[in-house]
Length: 209
Image 1 (cartoon, one colour):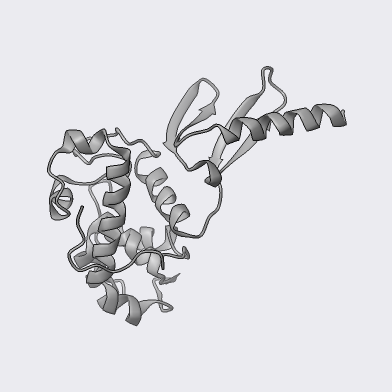
Image 2: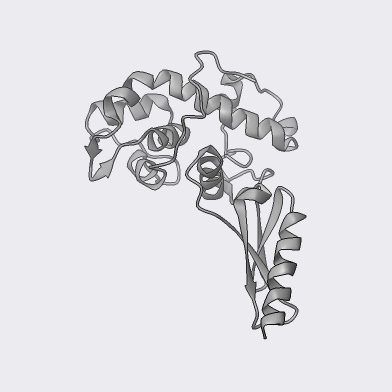
């Protein structure tokens, strides 16, 4: 029995070592593709099925990688190629006007370039952090609508609704709560993505690619 368990664990580790950014999550007959660095994934083995099923799932990482992958999973299940019904693009679901702001104009190139998408997400976070730096200093640690305000929550909400709407939310003590086209609001992102360490993101006034 111990030998079997050891074999399963060894096989799981070996498979994890060869995973790339395109990971697969298998659930019954469906598979959902998302993207995780191999160091930020764990493997669960289902021993009741032969051949064994391997489930790649995000680990809890409270640093920048965990922050961006959590947002990506919420936005697109980590799919670099996704275009939603409103025309939002890629792993992080950028609008074209937002892409233009960081000097990206070719949406086909954008959808086919994972590194460009990762760079774009960081650039937007840098820009939003610069725009919101005073509000971050004033608001982090406060509680609004039952949610403790954190820098990561602010940056996530800015990704959802824009830095201007996050300013309004913070400066009205939560009364101006902007919604996106799917009904998700600033408060929800403040709560869902609170508590990550986003000190890795540096505020840049004219962040662009």
